[in-house]
Amino acid sequence: MKTSLLAITILLAVSAQSQVRISDLTTYPNGTPTTLTGYGLVIGLAGTGDGSKSTFTPQSFASMMKGFGIEVDPSTLKLKNVAAVMVTCEISPGSRIGSKVDALVSSLGDASSLQGGTLLRAVLLDPWRKPVAEAQGPLSIGGFNYESSGSRLSRNHSVAGRIPGGIVLLENMDPLPAPSDTFLLNLMKPDLSLAVRIVEAINSKFSESTEVLDPATVLVRIPADLTTTTQRLSFQSSVGDLTVTPAASDRIVINERTGTIVVGGAVVLMPAAVAHGNLTVEISNRAGVSQPEAFSSGQTVVERQSRISVENAGFGLQEFQGVASVGDVARTMNLLGVSPRDMIAIFQALKEAGSLQAELVII
Picture 1 (spheres, rainbow, N blue to C red):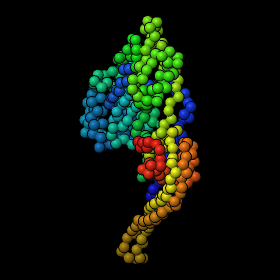
Picture 2 (picture 1 turned 90 degrees about the vertical axis):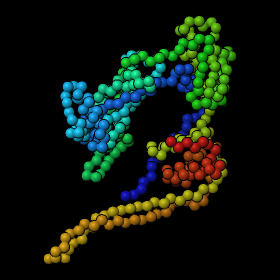
Picture 3 (picture 1 turned 180 degrees about the horizontal axis):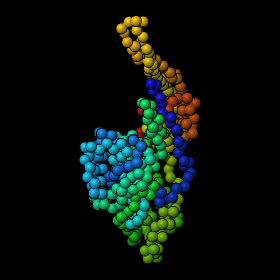
Picture 4 (picture 1 turned 30 degrees about the vertical axis):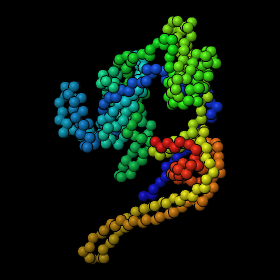
C-alpha cells in the first residue's frame, strides 16, 4: 500500500474586467427557493444495493409491496438490487403545476453503487411537511464502482446521482409579488463596493432611481409613469439585465475531497521564504511459502512478508518574491515543483505568516 497525493487543479478566477448581469449577483424579495425532500427506493442495481445492515430497506420494500396486494416478511428479504435513498431539490418561487426540475438522489444505507438504478415514485415534501411534488426515473451518476475478489475500480462518487427533469411539481409555488413603487435587490454576497457599482449602473440608465441601503441591499424606485403590472415587471427585468464589473475575489478556496484549488483574482503574495519537507511511507506486502522437509509431518504454510520504506523529500529554504496577480501566484508554486498536498500546507503557512493577503477557505 502506498499513500498517494490528490491530483489538484488550480483554477484561476475570471478576469476582473468581466461584465456580470445584476440579476446574477442579486436576488429579488421573496425569491428564495423552496427545498423539497423525499424518501424512496432505487431498484435495478447489479448486486450493489443495501446490505443486511440497512434494516429500513426491507421494511420499505415490504410496505411498498403491500400497496400492490402482496404480503412479504421483511425479515426474510435480502435485497441486493435495491437501495434506500433520499431525494432532494430546490423549487423556484412562481413555479406552476407540471414544472420539472432535476432530482438529486443520495444513498441512505450501505449500497456500494447506484449505477444503472431506477428511482421508484417518491413523494417530496416541503418544509411544512406538505406533499408538493413527486420524483421517478433512471439515475445518472457520472461514475462507476466495480469490485471483484478484493480489487476495486471506481471513478467519481457512485452513491449519489441525478435524474434530469425527474421531479414533477404537483402544487403551485407562491409567486413573486408584483412590485409597487419600489423593490429591493439583495446581494448574494454582501459587498459595499459592488452595491455602489450596481447603483451607479442603474442610475446611469434610469436617472437617479436607486440608492444603497447597506452592503447587502439596494433600493430601486420604479418610475411614476409606469402604472401597469406589466410595465413594472418589464422595468424590473431591465434592471436585472444591466451589467456591472464585480470586484475581484481575494479568496483562495481549497477542496481536498475533489482536489481543487481556486485562487481569486485579487490575491496578493508578499515576500516570504519557505522550506517544506515531504514524508512518504510505503508499505508493500508479498506472500512467502514455507515448505516442510521431505517425508516429514509438517505442512506448507503461506507467510505474509511486509517491507516498509520511508522517504523524506522536499526543498530547502526558497524565497518568494512579492507578487500581485493570480498568474504570478500559480507560476511561483509551479516553479517550486511542490505536490498538491504540499501546496495546501504552504498556502496555510503563508496565511499564518501574514505573507498571503487573501482569505483562505477550506471546504
